[in-house]
Image (cartoon, rainbow, N blue to C red; front, side, top):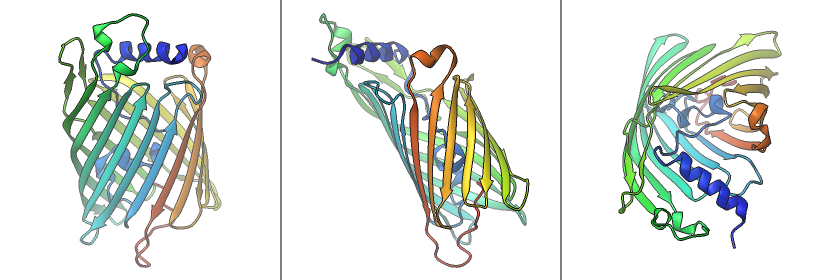
Length: 304
């Protein structure tokens, strides 16, 4: 028999998703995982780049959200063009969403130290809700039929970067897909998120740089998320920082530039305020690798 906590959490989840599908995944380390939120980020590392990220929210709670992403991108033809691929899998209780997108970006030098990029992505999104796996006390047709549907998706973005700052605007899911069950007891809409990001680097000394970042997310015209981050870079090797999230949580981040090519990151998020009694700590692990083909293939340090 399934545990009552799982049943209760799953039912709450059903109520929360009765009208709307899962939103675009949230990442504490978004400033190091740009392709996951903006297709125009492709080619930013000036060489073939691979990023892997896993996020585990409310660890220890049955049915807690998890997210895994794989991002691969590389510039082509003298850095003007870039291509990439993005795979994201989200799971919350009995509901999961899997997305795969191919990405193309065109990069325009706007100065000796800046680039303006335009990106598009297209792919498929699979939504699965295994309602029949729920342990309910009485038979209810509303929970007897599962959803397993695949829909197309397109997205776009723009990214302006400079040696010392960046700003990006993206709409990763532009199709308001609708998922229904045969009984028409439930209709689920996939929301339309718009994401604005930005950051800047200030040198404090030769050994220390300060890099504040921000992320603002709107879904169907409603403000749903604000993240304000402060990162410090020590000796161009260790990033350490803290983020405030509008969901009343704090994230603590540590990122290690092991070599010019290899980067490892970890973050821990904890809630405060009224929701701290129902939210357990969340963990996020990040690994990035940039393939170096020649002496000009990598820029170190990579602030963005």
